[in-house]
Length: 269
Image (cartoon, rainbow, N blue to C red; front, side):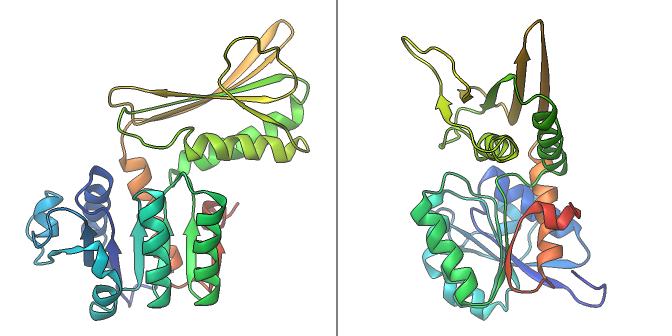
């Protein structure tokens, strides 16, 4: 963790997107960090601060294809990556090879993609936090779900998530994490994604995705029993919940021992 006498050099991928810009804004507001580099596949050469609407920072947006050279030249300590799975599976190993610690918020990895990322982190002895959701509230939500599942093990369980119409992967990584938390608590459950035609319910966990408008992120877990139901819900009002958590994680991972961590480690769970 940052000790007050050191400033972490933090780089951001997807710097010209909504999430990337908000992360840059949070870095600029943090006295213990400085933005060292910004990467994207568009707006190459433009000022990253101007793109994030935080004022000129004299840091040009670099081509993501040049990530290794730029990370080394800028002495970057931590890379924050909230992009898409095919991009992250290239960015993360490149950063790890440069000795750069990682904050990964991308979701939708295949098992093979995740294995490539994990191998690069462990092989290069860097520290990484990998989480489907950096909101503090969502990670408390996961803990509540674990306790609820223990007490409501005989209830039918459905997970409904809703996001904006530009989100590429479905179901969301947060919905899948919620399902995994419940399934692990109950000793293993089958997942059913939506239902169509003849679909009698058994003891599975149903998972449903909604895409529309500018919904930031809603997640509801329904425990339905005879004569009653309990709904546990988290709603993100803005992306600041995720950006703030990611920068908090970057401060934590800056001084962490090599390894792969989750938000549970950062929040002391």
